[in-house]
Image (cartoon, rainbow, N blue to C red; front, side, top):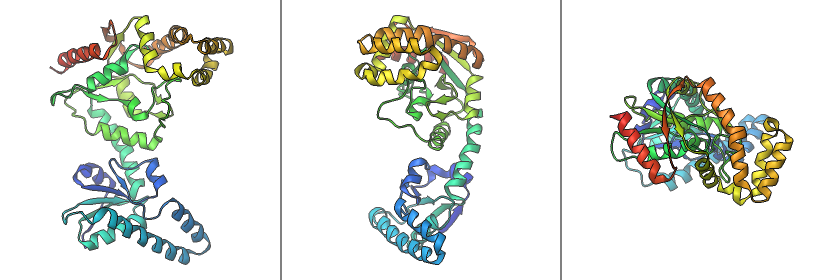
Length: 358
């Protein structure tokens, strides 16, 4: 038998050494969060786990028999569907909630076949704790350059342009927190049709991104508040960002309005949705102002609404936040943009990369 228990901390270090990471939990548990690149082979599915759990409270012995029968059937299907083509040297890593019966049953059968199976001691629960402990270590070893600038100044576009410079090993490293969070990090930052990850999944995504960075080269990141939509940026990452040097993008107001009209065109095309989101600004700007913006939007004057949102709401709030929270903002290197087209920002990104990385 070739079954090897492994600590969650060691699993984090060796994660890329395994051919397949197998999550034996239910579909719902997997959806909430899982190890990077894991596949879901439920030993018990959502319905079965509830059924066995309910029976367990009344008769533990009968519940164990039922659970064993269901698990055996499910494991047989997983082997038939996913394992028959695996070579002898296939090396899987398995886990369930606490490293107990679900991953243990699957791992035992795989090891009896002859595969070298590693199973995480303590399961996902231990993995989650290890990730939370490991994020500060990665944040500390990295050097961030924070891209600041008022709303609509092209911060995200520049970050994407930097990320697209993949021509060599010296290409810029980018931490795109908004992409990981599926949110544009403001009251109006919701992305239609895209659900945000759970907090646990977001933490895992951030950890998995940080661990792949080269500490010898800077990491570009956009200035963010503590929360990106409904998920919170890990505190250690936030602290490191706030203590890091900054760039300050400047773009004329007219260009900023045009950029936002492009990036948030779904609001222009769905004014009812736009008006609904504007409701969230009532506490900050007052009922009368918000109602006026909603009336303008309904009468196809979204550009006017966007300009007033910038000058009356976002700009004052943003500048106060940057001055209060980001130590490097006062001495930020200013980058003045004349336009925000992909071609122009690509050239800016190339120049910035050459200047900082050389």
